[in-house]
Structure formats: structure tokens, C-alpha cells
Amino acid sequence: MREYETVIGLEVHCELATKTKIFCGCTTEFGGEPNTHVCPVCAGMPGTLPVLNKQVVAYALSAGVALNCDITQYCKFDRKNYFYPDLPKAYQITQFDHPICTGGYITVTGGKDIRINHIHIEEDAGKLVHDDYEGISMADYNRCGVPLIEIVTEPDFRSIEEVQDFVEKLALRLKYAGVCDAKMEQGSMRVDVNISIMPVGSTEFGTRAELKNLNSLKAIGRAIEYEINRQAEILDNGGTVIQETRRYNDNHGDTKALRSKEDAHDYRYFPEPDIPPVFLSDEEIEDIRKSMPEMPQDRFVRYTEKYGLPTDDANLIISSKEFSDFYDESVKINPDYKQISNLMLVELNRNLNDSEKTISDVTFSPADLAELVKMSTD
Image (cartoon, rainbow, N blue to C red; front, side):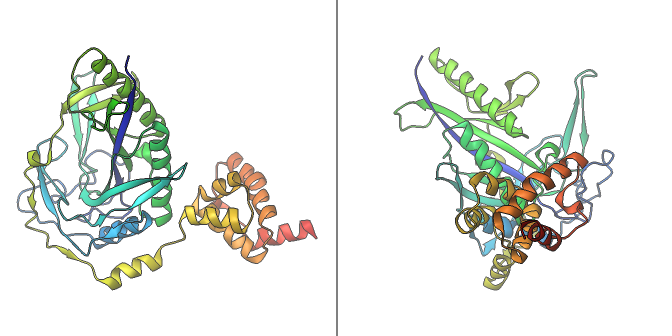
């Protein structure tokens, strides 16, 4: 058997945390009975017109700033034409050649920068519910029109660990920016993995397969591992890997072909005639930059280099923005960085876990915690 190098790029779909959908007033709330969060606009009825939700643009800008992107001051919407049962209009409103953000990166463990190609805004499709026992599929359109950003990376990943670390860091940054709750188990963050392999030492990428809608770090790891082995077996036996879209079955631990992989020309993109282009001023972009909280990677540097916290402690504190904010407010009052960290990470966390609560549920203030630490050390 030959040795292969893995090449991976990601397309990450993130539902934005708006109260209403991207082009209508329907709720974006998760759950609900099937087809109860639907109106003529998001159901794709003839004669309806979309009206862009301004908050969607603001959240997309915030995501771009959080991911070190360049903001496009002129962007537009396009129609991506394809028929699928969960897309009632038979086209999706998205952004093609003028996305709202370009460039950007996230640094993963080991210091490697994973480059972001672009971020674009689009509407989500519905959801198909498959009943294998009855042999039928049912469509739930509640998710139709929920605003998304799609974050497209360059093919910079070479290992499962890099992919998982990137997804974790991406989710944390989006939560800090307040634009997405990144609850993969609820589908508000879904990862498509484009994966190919090539012989070690080769400079030419292999044929890629796309794994759709992976919704946990464990599923991402298992799906990539299976696909590497599948493609290697094909090549070792003298076969040819086909460019296609595949679905990972977590129960069986394998991937199955869904359809041949489309290219851009297959979707017959053209400018969306019902939505005017978006022009962003320097002032609007600067207002977004000023409103952003300190990002987790910057807090990590401050905690370890200025406050002298161990890296494990710093990572635990920044894993929740609310927890990190509480810590910051406490040390402003009593700069006993290590003792406050110890109390929060050991006693407070233990009590929160035992009571199945979060830091936002506590009935005392950061000032109370700072005073308690001060009293215990006097």
C-alpha cells in the first residue's frame, strides 16, 4: 500500500442568531411542530418578494471581523438554481461573485494559519425527515429562510486534529461575537468536509469527495478517517476516485454516495433581481469593529502572559464568554488572578455542574466573589 497525504477544505454553515428569518418575519426559534414557522415568502409562493433583514448583514460583518477577514463594501445577492425537495422555490438566494467577506484566518494549535477564502450570506433550506420503516421522506420547511453565513476555507488542513481544532476555535469566536450559538447538535452549525488524498511527495491534489452536514467533532473525525481509507483502497486497487457528494451515517460508521458533485456552472447563478446590492460605509464597518468584544485568543494571551495563569486554566476560562467576563469583572476589583481563577474553576464550576446551571444563573456578583477571595487571603 502506498502512503498518502490528506488534503481537506471546509464549508461551514452557521445559522445567525437573528429573531426573524432573512427575508420575512417568521421566527427562527429552534423546534416547533413541522411547518409551523412558515409564511408565503419562506415557502416560496409565487408573487412574494423578499425583504432583507438588516441584522443579518450586521452579524455577517461581525463574523468577518472575528475571523480576521477583509470586509467587502459592495456585495450583492444571487440565485443559485437547483431542485431539491427541501427547497420549495427551486432556487436559493445566496452570494456568488461578490461575498460580504474575503480572506481571513484562524490559527490552530501548533501555530498554523488556516486561511479563509470567503464568507457569504445565504438562506437555509428546509429539512427532510426520512422514515426508513415506512419508506417515505417528509419535508419540514420551518428552517427555510433562516439566515446563514457559509465560511469557506482554503484546502489547508492535513489532519483530522487540525480540522477539529479549527471547528472548535471557529465556534468559540462566533459565540463571542454573538452571531451564532454554534449548537451543532441542533444544526445551527454544520460542517461540509471536502477531502482528497494524494501520494506523499505529490504536488497535484487528488479528486475530492464532499461529506455533507457533519454535526459533531466526533462525527467529523470518524467521517474523515473512513473517507481516507475508502479513497486509499480505491487507488491501491487501481481505481479512480469519483468527484461526488456523500453522506456520513454515524450509526454505521460509513459514507454513502448522494449525488455527483456539482460545479458552479451547474447552478446557473444570476443576480437576484428582487434584492438591491448592499453598500457598506467605512463608518458602518468601523462601528462593528468597535462593538466587538475581546476575542478568546486575545484573552488567552492576557491571562497567560500578563496574569501568569497556566495555559490549562486560561483555556478553561475562555471556553465560555460569560465565564470569562465574570472572571474579568472580579479581577478588576481584586487582582488576585490565580486565587480567583482557582475558586471559579474548582468550587464554582463544581457547584454549577452539580446543579446543572451556568454562570449566568448565579445569584452573586463578580464583586462578591472578589471580596470573598480577599477575605480568605487576609
